[in-house]
Length: 194
Ligand code: CUA
Image 1 (tube, rainbow, N blue to C red):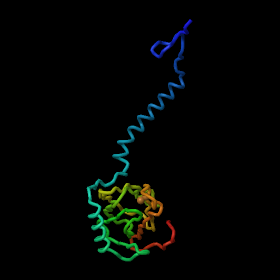
Image 2 (image 1 turned 60 degrees about the horizontal axis):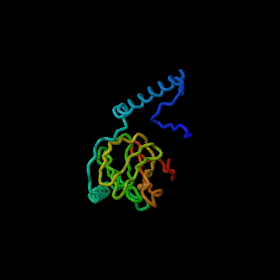
Image 3 (image 1 turned 45 degrees about the vertical axis):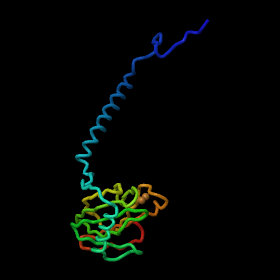
Image 4 (image 1 turned 90 degrees about the vertical axis):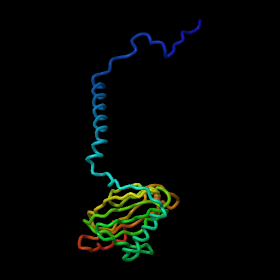
């Protein structure tokens, strides 16, 4: 009277499966090969991709970083834009940039083709350094000083946009980097991000 109960522990009766079709086996083969390619790309891209940060990374006290940046601003200030200092450090020097709610400080004026060590850190929470319209992105973390060796490759008037949600004013956190050409000439400012 009781119906036959069947549990997952019993083997099903009868022919309940068909061997995989040839095309399905082929598909599994291709998918597996692609997995291996992508897996190999991870270490390969790390070594050959040319996208790794310079590896200068040390702990820093936010107050000390702020102090260092103020000295840097005082040393190389050449003007200001609506109250924000424009700083023009000599080629080859250490450059300091603060990310904080909700600004990037100071405005940097760099020279095309010159190399700089750009130190970025945050004074409060995580921010995202994103250079617009160039696709350059970096995490800015409080308590860490990241030194990036950078060489601007094109003159122009660029914007730093925060791409890490950092609070109510996140969308207003826009900074500015001016790159003058190798003769030191600034391109005409369009007023808008180029
Ligand atoms: Cu800083 Cu979003």
